[in-house]
Length: 380
Ligand SMILES: Cc1cc2nc3c(=O)[nH]c(=O)nc-3n(C[C@H](O)[C@H](O)[C@H](O)COP(=O)(O)OP(=O)(O)OC[C@H]3O[C@@H](n4cnc5c(N)ncnc54)[C@H](O)[C@@H]3O)c2cc1C
Image 1: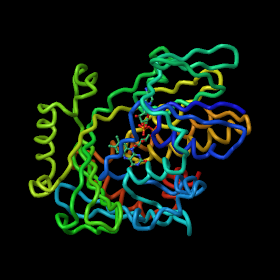
Image 2: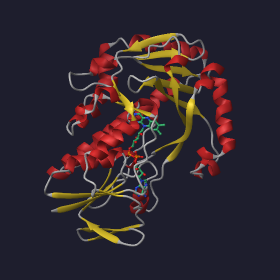
Image 3: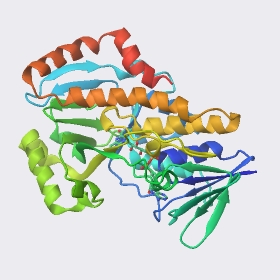
Image 4: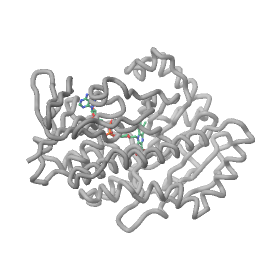
């Protein structure tokens, strides 16, 4: 029996463990640095059909209907005048059992965790050193060591596992924007269709509002262009500093209406860090999820790609196939689209904005374009 050690119990590590669960040729253990899987109740996640198809392989379709939502369209608006620009029918990519889904992140994590036995996840485990000796990999924790045949590094964008094996060569970079997560009640938003995803475009700022289930609360996620100096970038607790929170709130206040601003609840800030390069890990060691490559959030593909990457890795280990290069090609394509989305969503020049809106109106109804721009991502 081969031993697989997974570092990090996030979406990618948990999904991979679910795939290997029940395969008698492999024994999996996840080492998670936190004392539990922290699941902030309110915040949401979007999952496109490419990841729903893979989640269904481990029984996601049996999750109660009231815990998820299937938006039909993305409605595009201009923040400046609240006018709708156009809409895009994302449900066109759905099939009977695979539908574009939004839900609480906590529900997804609970589902992934509940399917695993109690002995699979070891909490309070942060790896300090990784050693290679012939075919054996040794992980050193605070007061003990373990050996494994395969090492999967899925500890997120600031991956310590990746830093250890790459000698700090592969650090993420600040994406010059801050993500603002919040909840908002349906009663506070008028003139939008609560059955859809609403995407509001503005100068150096966009925000997305979507339902997570049939409840009153909607998920709010804003992406605000914002410069940070090097000390701020290095401060992992910046989002708790009161001066920073006030600075972002004051900037946000200039971007959205006072009434919308007042209605935001449970506001939490995340400076957005992304990967700048790929790192091919040594012998029987693989990176997945944000540790493999952290995308900018403007295509909402981070979680979906984490799931896709874990599935590809599972198949690669079982069948001894190349994982890194194939995954890298796909992530490069999605990263280019994500960066382009962010550029287009944040335009500030009125002529460019006018041109963008006309293009959006035409392209969101152009079958060929949609097949190529979204279909290539949503159909894996
Ligand atoms: C504001 C925001 C909104 C987003 N919205 C969406 C969305 O709508 N749709 C979408 O597809 N994606 C979205 N994403 C991206 C998505 O959340 C990530 O891409 C995804 O969670 C990555 O999963 P992961 O398993 O690689 O890492 P993570 O989910 O970050 O999990 C990493 C795990 O590793 C653990 N860990 C960290 N360090 C160590 C260590 N040294 N030792 C052991 N364990 C460790 C952590 O505690 C954590 O449990 C969003 C991201 C942000 C910031």
